[in-house]
Image 1 (tube, rainbow, N blue to C red):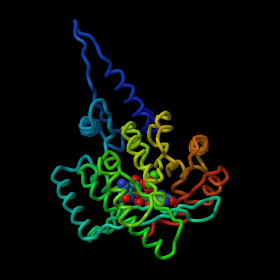
Image 2: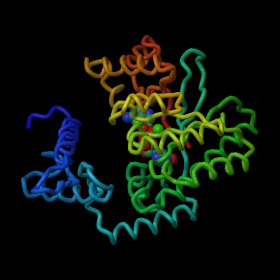
Image 3: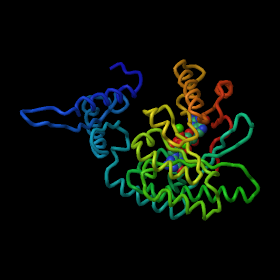
Image 4: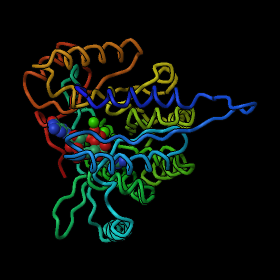
Length: 327
Ligand code: C2E
Ligand code: CA
Ligand code: CA
């Protein structure tokens, strides 16, 4: 009770996992358990104990699916039935074929050079009945059903096609930043897909950057280090997305072949009014610079945020203040 932030529940879950996983001795046997924890939070995940417990239970099964000794927060999408998932998968597959998916692009400003140096590709689903569906409403399910692999390949190809078209139209020195799902990061085919697509569009790796969330990078850090190193060999830039919202091991962070951290918009939002967010943002910029990394602030909406970030030597800025993602 009295939690300030949901992350506190995660900290407790982690220490519980650690304690409960410890081997114990019964008679002459050494026994081990691998606990799974589901977390639901009042009032967001249920108005009463029954519903909270039911949803925590559902979250626990998701934790179990991810392997031994895990915890998982409850999310609405877990309530979707297997039947609905199958239907969704079919719909998304059809959307891919019918050309209902689109990439929109949001500029990133290079503060020192006062120019647009990159754009981030953000996917949209133009649903004939439901209108534009935003990625938060279909990427998680696409990951769960595995269709993210086809989707990710389409996204990569489409972003490269657009970048090549812009180059042909005379727009030079623009980098394309593409979001990568954790599932793609774990895929054996990823490096091959990237190199083939680059060749098909006559692009060099240095014209692209991949964004991987902090949680994805830390989920299996050894694998991430390997995969990212191979991608880096192709010349692509690498950025850690949503930095500060997950749990980074700084030891691993140092080993990742990355060039950029993206300061999450949750911190930027209240930078002017919340002392904590101000300090976290300032410290993150400092951390990035002392590790030799560049930092991008996302979700910049106000002049005040803009001035603060520029004054604190943030390298790149992205947000509605400059432009929304555009088709
Ligand atoms: P993200 O990578 O953190 O992307 C930033 C999100 O913030 C985008 O939401 C963007 O439209 C929004 N945004 C940009 N500027 C502002 C601002 O000033 N204020 C506010 N409040 N929001 C701003 P969007 O497009 O809905 O994407 C949500 C998330 O979905 C992305 O978060 C990313 O994790 C995922 N996503 C989007 N496109 C792709 C994709 O092609 N592949 C994968 N794997 N994930 C994607
Ligand atoms: Ca991103
Ligand atoms: Ca973000």
